[in-house]
Image 1 (cartoon, helix red, strand yellow):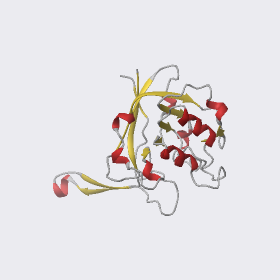
Image 2 (cartoon, helix red, strand yellow):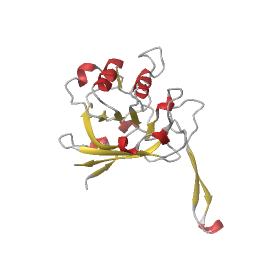
Image 3 (cartoon, helix red, strand yellow):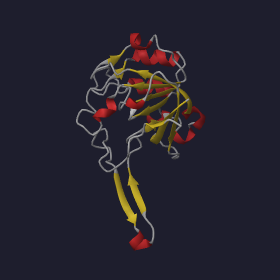
Image 4 (tube, helix red, strand yellow):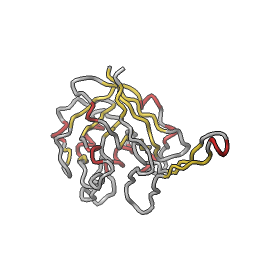
Length: 216
């Protein structure tokens, strides 16, 4: 099988969004073969660290958490869209996607993952206009994956409202998967299915996920 792993490795140098309240990833040894006869580890990480899935609860009060997302929604055919022509700080407008076939699961490739663990990663990544997001939802998209940190404007100049695209997507029960990697291995002439399975944590607003695509 031709499988591409789109998941970032979680380690102690894993980047986070940079806000003062967000925990840095810590992976520590709890027990070792020498001390207790087995290796065990302790993980401290935010629910939106590295490759992860957002649950509606992330932004919408009273909505459901990651443990209530049906796994069937996270596995199946996916349309891969090449947006590598969108440069730093540019916007995906409606005209950029109105000729793209919209399916239930969409994977948007910008090539931004190459900035991972550099100062550029969280600065002026490409993002979607609200008009484009609404069009995708109205056309039947229910799963959005991308190799940037967010479908929203990271610089905060798009709208006065914080993260409007997240709110529109999650209010409409669209699954969001962010921080993908290795998207340069995708052949856009081929068809793929995706599996994006988050940790099943009760009432969580999101969780790290192992995300793969397989050629079909």
